[in-house]
Length: 492
Image 1 (cartoon, rainbow, N blue to C red):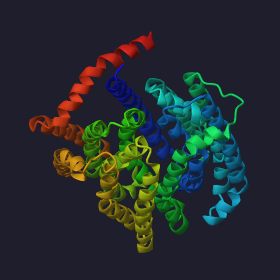
Image 2 (cartoon, helix red, strand yellow):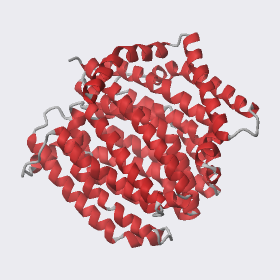
Image 3 (cartoon, rainbow, N blue to C red):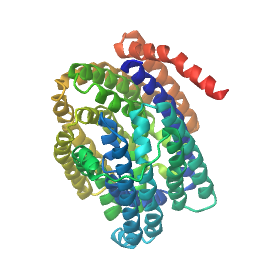
């Protein structure tokens, strides 16, 4: 089977899985946000500032190293497995014991039990790194996505039940932990891999140079993305952080789902042809166009429908999210172009380049967020975050582009028609929403706006004969029968 067939089939499975996951996650988010309060989400965001940071060291980039390395063997895998278990157990003990200190730092006593329970995610996560990386390396995205959908549904049911029974923030903690616990045995069964009683430092060192720089980048990038949560939680409280974190998560949900449809496939695919730079460049530019085809209208459509979206689905207690979403959606437009550049660094084995870009780029983001917090509100933080993303839009593409002979303009120029059509659609949808009768429920207005926006977007794409529109249609037509046949076989 050709690389093209493997790649597109993997993207097709990721698309099917991510759409299913996104529908589930969104539905669960609606229920949970109606049952819980902004302060509950603020507590969870505070905990994840610290827990998520340590999680970078828990994996230490070994999962990606397994995917990238061509000559991986059983000793590599077993050695990484036992090291990750030891690291995970160590972090679990550390954060369980220091949860009280973290609660004192944020001046929030309710944070202690949240931190203690979430500390077990390190041990659980360490167990699943190797089987998960093997499934990705083998491009078994059908199995990966089936596991993902199953764990999202089951863990979501647990979270909703606990929220209904009045457990507050602990329902979110239970949802997170049960997601990992349910998925763990399923990954081992799917990968058909068992660890051996082997620990070879020689084999670990062979992976270390790749994983160490990747971990360094992830540390820097993490604090760039979490410094806003840290500073808002510290100086503005859990309610403000809950509103900000929900706005960021809702902005990130569609774009992360679109990118993740292809990111798990693109890394192993580009790694397999890492010496053919011209081919990597061609594939990368086409894939970015497809990502923009789906992401741009969602992001700009969110700007146009933010008020009816939040009030109609989540309720008036989340009204403070509306202006934040409108700002952060433009960040999403830029991030759907910049985030995938990591594929280039990783496929070329240039995690050292990736690390030094992180020092500059992520450092700039942290400075901007500090300025936003100093200016005094969650809205100034969002504006500062947008401003720095605009400034970084050139180097974030130009620097990794040098590794494969790709210029900045070669990426952005093909995206301009998609952006202009998406912006035109959003403007029409916004004014159409304002023209609707004020007495109508917000959810009705949202449905009308979404239907109108989809019709306008696809009509303009077809009318102006935009190449990516026909590219997507061809891909769907080619691989829809394969996926439908696979689904029918599994159903039987």
